Length: 242
Image (cartoon, rainbow, N blue to C red):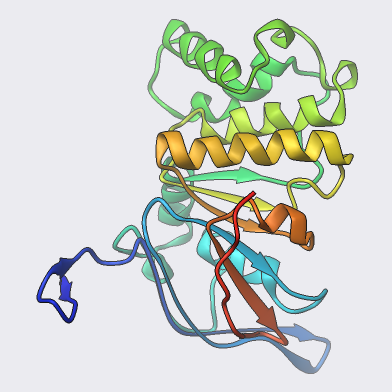
């Protein structure tokens, strides 16, 4: 159902809608709360940075939104889908079709070339081999790696490996890109290149991006900044831009 603002204009529902979300983990006989009563909306096309001290629950919240983990209670909708109600197999299918993952340490297969790494998510689709190759070539071109298609991860710099990882994340044209400390293992120059690429994906392709980072400079590339403190949302000042 669509809501109206004070002027009577109809507002589109948020792309990510979280209501009273809670998550804890069991450590032996002890229950350790991680997230408490999280309520948050993220609109489509937003580039949001999520910051907070170590142990604040940033990665846990990211994993819940991406459907990697499930909450103890609360409501979590992404693109209008209540992902907490999906079975494990349905959730896996939903992730494959809607989420692009970017990790701190790239998670590339060392025995595969850049092209083969990017192609991996497409192997779960019905695309022909020729169509997959065309999609891979286009995506590697988008991230500036036309000349590195047949190189293995060990032959690439850290920044180039992360760009391969970004290409792999976007090759299926996902609705949401989630990035967990995507520049944490990069030097400042490489980090700036990767963040600039994410910013272009957001601004030029309209991708919704949710990025966990501990780096205030990285957060400046986002349009919105959210803070987590001890599993609870705190003040949310706007990002100032790069």
